[in-house]
Image (cartoon, rainbow, N blue to C red):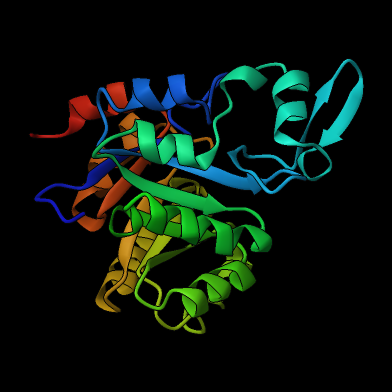
Length: 233
């Protein structure tokens, strides 16, 4: 995954209505090196790419854990294009991946799928939940494992999670700690030997990413087509 410039990964492919679907991933890969996607399990044990734990349809809420994959495909508003993780691994040839693991019971089957389809070396397995990070590290000590920062409380876990490969840091932290402190924080993380994956919740990527590029190893971009223009290739 190493390159002379930071990697560009499509955030759920391209953020929006079709995020976490094959069309979104394929669109992102026209401009990105890979994609970031969320991983959850259906009731019948299928790994699917879906951010939230459930969805609303016709006024009712459906938790993914209560649905089979066939039911998910039928009930979800865009269910027919929500892929299984194996579809992502087999369809997106040569891409690098960041699998954001949302449930601890998805860890073992996800690692098996990555090994089965030969994508272990092209995948970073990340989570915002320390117990999931620890589970991945225990199950696969040689895997590239990332920890996502989602708030101040996340920071206390950084020194405790021995063996992690990367920290996934939100650009939004700039609005809380200030630009100078944010740069210092990234520099401190890098001195520990951690790769920095920058992601975005609600900030202007095109404004902030160019200013932070020297301090990051990958950018998980909401819109890779626009972001690509700020890179010198």
